[in-house]
Amino acid sequence: MRCNYTKAFLTSLLLSIYAYACGYVVWAVWFHKTLVPLVGMYRDMATPEWMYGLPLGYLVIGFTYSLAFCVFGKHMCCECKTLRGLKFGAVFFLVCALPGAIFSYALYPVPFDIALAHITQGALIYLGGGVILSRLASASCDRAEGCDMPEMCDAPVPAEKAVVKPAAKKAPAKKAAPKKSTARKKSK
Image (cartoon, rainbow, N blue to C red; front, side, top):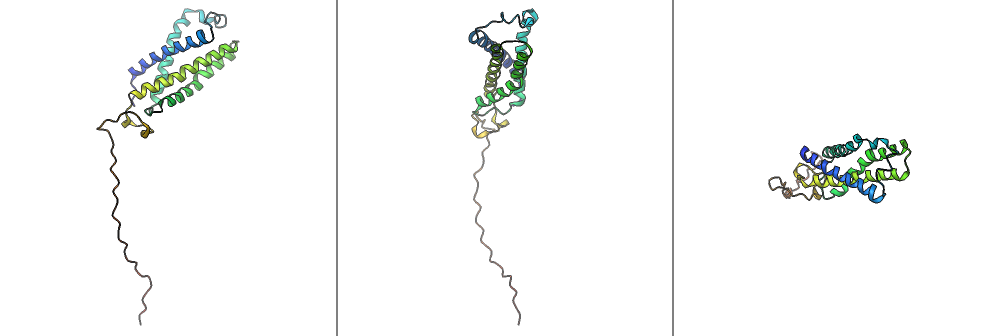
């Protein structure tokens, strides 16, 4: 699969909207918190640069995530695409979101529930984003370009690219040649 940059940009927009939705669900619905009590801890959050930087940050995260998926998640055309998207998201969560949340918890004196909210939001963003990316990538999958599990692939194969293996022909059995005697004849 080749990386389509227009599709990657549109996917990054979708992922940034998804990240906003995850942030709203985690902070406002589940933890019943807003950014107002956090302003005392994160003084930078009260500045307009930070508030304008948040959408840009989500967009950059979504764009790099979708580009990384184009590079590393090439063979996502199998029917187990949800599981593979979760694996891809779990790797990014362990590499990107979890260390960032632990670092912010260790750096700032924040309560544990705020750190847990950061970890939960990162898990939702990256695991759900992996599933979204795997579904979008598998919609345009071409089996002829290589799937690592072609027997499980559910993408249609174009007729001109379908590979038909000929049936194995049974070779005719060869007659066994008579064995030559290795014993020497003695002459009288």
